[in-house]
Image (tube, rainbow, N blue to C red; front, side, top):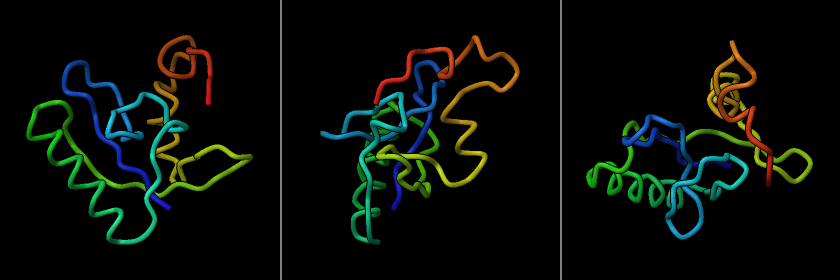
Amino acid sequence: MKVITANRLLDGDVVWLGENDVWVERVTLARTFDGKEAVAEGLSIGAAAEKDQKVVGVYEMDVTMEDGAIVPVRLRERIRAKGPTTHPQLGKQAQAVSA
């Protein structure tokens, strides 16, 4: 299972491709893609958003489901999903978590 991620060009925030091709700020709200064709479709949507200068650095990432929530597999992606590691009062970890 994969999700499509990028950085929003306006402010650099990490975003994920959600339902209805909307970029969301929480990995738990991301649309999941299974299979090569579905992932290719997601990357195509991301490429179009990159061309429209909405996001930059579009790529796919592996995720798993834990307790009904999407969780990144790699540590790097878990850090991107939570925000800066030096100040827990900043970034996504400081925001209220909503699934």
